[in-house]
Picture 1 (cartoon, helix red, strand yellow):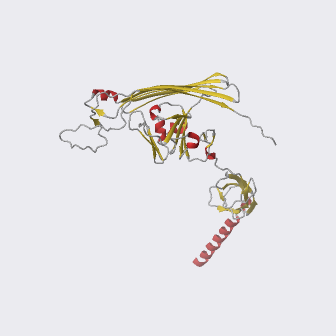
Picture 2 (picture 1 turned 120 degrees about the horizontal axis):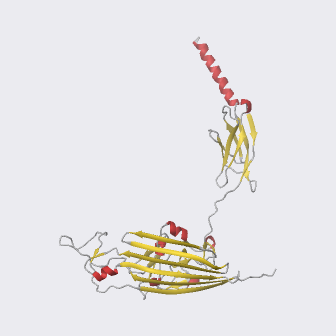
Picture 3 (picture 1 turned 90 degrees about the vertical axis):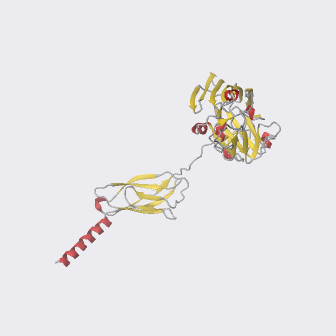
Amino acid sequence: MKKQLYYLGIVIFLISFLGTLEAQTILRGQVTDDADGEALVGVQVFADGTPAFTETDERGNYELQIPYKKDQVYQLVRFQYLGYAEYSDFYRVTPDGKLFESEEDIKLTSQAVKIEDVIVTANKVEEEMQDVPIAISVVDALEIEQKTASSVAEAFFAIPNLLTESYVPGSFSFSLRGLNSDFSNPGIENAVGLYIDEVYFSRAYHFNSSLMDIERVEVLRGPQGTLFGKNTIGGVLHVLTESPKMGNSGALELSGGNYSLLQLRGKGNLMLAKDKLAIRFTGAYRKRDGWLLIENNDRAKAANKTQFYGGRLSLLYKPSDKLKITIKGTKSEDLKAENPLDYMPRIFGPAFPTVDNDPLNRRSSPNFQDPKYTRSIIGGSAKLEYQLVVCARS
């Protein structure tokens, strides 16, 4: 009796298993490129929510066996391939619980990733960055904002192989590919050229890094003497400020930080004549206490601070579609500037050694009597652009 029940169970299992095999859908076809009709190899085909999965062969053919689900009429099938838009659709499955075969040819549409165009002026003309045969890095206004850089000098920190250092108040030294520009020594020729709005700055004493409204920063590596002249054997740092736009806009920024930092920056753009005349203005104010703790020199203590204010005014005039005139003027004042490095001897008590290796020790004992630092900058530039029409004979 037990043996009969055993064989009966086997028969029931086989009948159920064969019925399951019969109650399925077989979906087959070919997957090709929508543009040229070329067969796509390795396209992933799967039925959503089931273990059914397959890939196309060398001719783009596929065959997917979709398992039976009770009371299911339609099944979602997906086609995925790298670089192409996903295709999905519902297909009818297992009508009346029987074997159902269906053929479906699929065409996938290419969806190549397009890198956003970056416009640079490395060759003195506006062109896409990918078309410039120069090792170049670009930091635009959006990236400067995302990195929360409060000055152009801080924006330089994000550029590989570029070192920005400051040894004396208000001046910077740039090193690019191992070549250094010592802007603090007037007797040494620069190896890295600094340009702001296509105007050469021979010394970083003229470099105002606190103003906002920067369009982008371009760093050109390697000798650039052909287009930018001498003192560019290491490369060129080019800072481009925003030009006026034919529209109305504005922004205001207030920030603070440690050592009593307070910074206020703002910008505005006004269109004075429709599509003809526009004006843009920007300004900044920055104050901060110095990092050093000067305890024995009141004059040095009073001078070891940062206090800056400045502004820029730009005018855009477009008398015609071919002619564009841009004029920019800058005025800034540095009333105080803290020492970026501590070269001065520090104060030690009787229980302390004469050598201090603590980098966080801010105490300092300067020996100069009348420390002063002031800087006043007035500058401007004008640019005329005229579009030439070139006619070629056939």
